[in-house]
Amino acid sequence: METSGINFKSGFVSIIGLPNAGKSTFLNSVINEKIAITSRKPQTTRRNLKGIYNDEDSQIVFVDTPGVNEGKTILDDYMAKSVKASIDSIDLIIVIVDINTYNDDNYYKLIEILKKQKTKKILIINKIDAYTHDVDEAKKEIISRFGENIIFDKVLAISALKKRHIKEVIECVKEYLVEGVQYYDKEYITDEPTKKIVADMIRMHCLYKLSKEIPHSLDVTVDSMKLSRSKCMNINATIICDKDAHKKIIIGTGGQMIKNIGTGARISIEKFLDQKVNLKLNVVVKNNWRNEKSMLANFGYDFSKI
Image 1 (cartoon, helix red, strand yellow):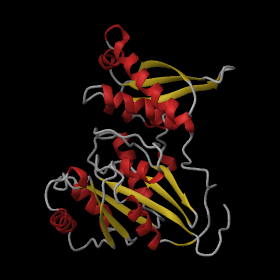
Image 2: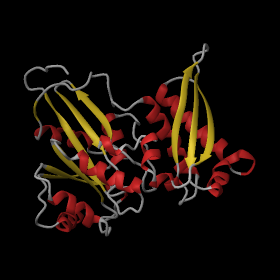
Image 3: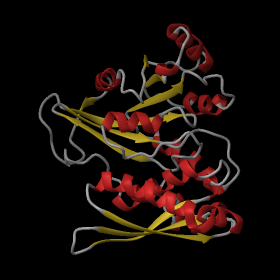
């Protein structure tokens, strides 16, 4: 941890919201790198992920969180606790709302979390690029949705996908941070291990390719990453699912589905690592893994660390 010069601001900012509000897309736009996976399916983000923004006079550590939602499994409980843990001892909370779906009934859970927080809050209304009505009117309705007990210090409207008004958000965040130290080296964009990012990229392509119900029941672990003499990164990874029927779907007829997943994932990983990749995927069945704490810990969902 370095001591910074005068007027250097730093702090930790939690990003919370409902599933599919665009939290991960927002983080990627701020960092200008794809470190958080994105899809239109719920449970895309399953654990807290730090993205580190650096410029000459600040370092802002953004914490992307799972979507606030009702759940039925121990994995769902882990994600809910991750959200609450992310706003403990945080400097600022960003609440992201999809302007097109702000009437979602799950808002009551988000409201209950925010009621207990005295930390300053910024409301970010996202996806204005796809909104055809009056944005100012929508702002008023969204603010009233949260009720009188929740006060936002600032309200901004953005398009995270199109990177519209991202700079305004960063400048706004700086207003609420105090002078501090540089927590990470300026070359860092995340403290996430490379293996976890690679595993998430593979899972992202599972989300893209597979039918609606299967992605909820699968996860990915990277078993090994080894650089060959030819400078090719050899990666062996395992897709975990909880039913034999799902394994067959993931593999596909003649192995075509897993081949498609592997091809898409390899291209994404090569862009991230900036090198050639040889990716081998295996599929195993672990019955009821989402309700087994020991298995969840092995897959990186450790309750003792949140």
